[in-house]
Length: 292
Image 1 (tube, rainbow, N blue to C red):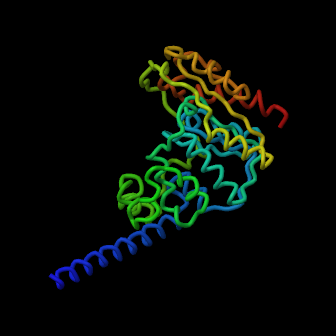
Image 2 (image 1 turned 120 degrees about the vertical axis):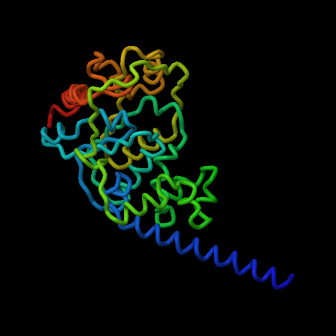
Image 3 (image 1 turned 180 degrees about the vertical axis):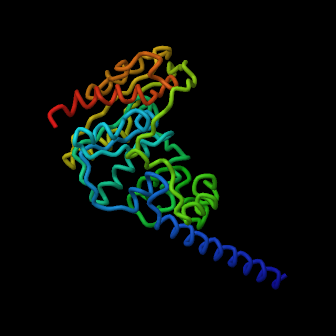
């Protein structure tokens, strides 16, 4: 029995050691990557300067045409991430400032994402390789239910989020295989093929969102001109009064929900195609950057 216990302990120690080694190896790969996505592009960078930075969900990623800002003489990048929430947008801004970014104007797409304070696990997972190297990431995740497992159990995060940061992604990252996320200065254009042209947002309610407040406060503390914007949805959407509720709770958020209305400018009910995005971006540049 004693020998069995000793053998079992040795096996467990060996497994633990293997997990530590794998954790270190995977993490080193991600620490040497800057071309797979917007998170590693920011994390493994320093001291960039932008006239305009865009943050938000796919309704930022697909709606703000970065090249049009640059044609105006404004250095810009669209850091919007499809599927993300304000949890990730706030963390991205914190990382940029930690890396000494100079940002003159921050456009934040903030409308539907005000209705929750949860992390978007598929996007948030991309920050996890750096959780032991970054105090900012550790603190940002510290109130999440699974924080202790993610932080203290070696290699757990890579197993728990295998589809996002597991072996396949680590392998592609080690090969320095680029993606399309950084093309067009971060803007991702959508085509004319129609998706779902009906939507129902009647169940959504804008919260007093702590991550929105964080972003607002960070901008004020760092002399960044904060431009929060609600972006267009198709007219078939049920519950469009949601945007009026947002405006009532947050008077400073600019409501552009009906700035583009014709279905020909939409790829789906919540996302404009490239033509619609260009029409919308031209309006934003005219309204906020005409003096540049």
